[in-house]
Length: 149
Image 1 (spheres, rainbow, N blue to C red):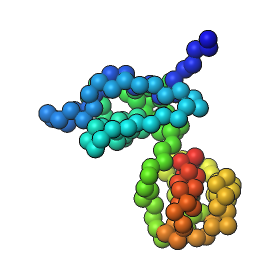
Image 2: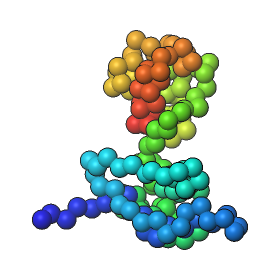
Image 3: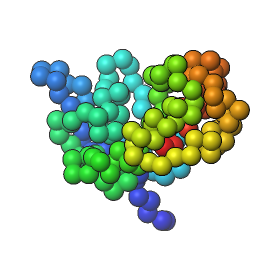
């Protein structure tokens, strides 16, 4: 049997806020082409765990590796390769889609051709539309485009 390498590896992850234990010894791996869900009740530490993986929040202890990069040693490398699509996005509602893609391109320091990116998610006809004018499905597709940057 072929050994697979984990794209995301979380081992014994702990995050404490003073006396509150937000994440308590969480361990899991996510493999390439795998669909993975992180489920739990409110306050279980799901968002905190994702923020640690995304290098947006410091962990108390444990090990987190994303595509071979450690959140402790290589956070900038992780930020360059990771994309996250949230259920609700917080885009500037009065910017059009091209302007938003240019903004994200600048934030990530990546050269992106907005019309090519919009074509990938079948939104090139909405290039000059304001984000707030999109339908729910179009907003989700646009969110995928920004995640791919």
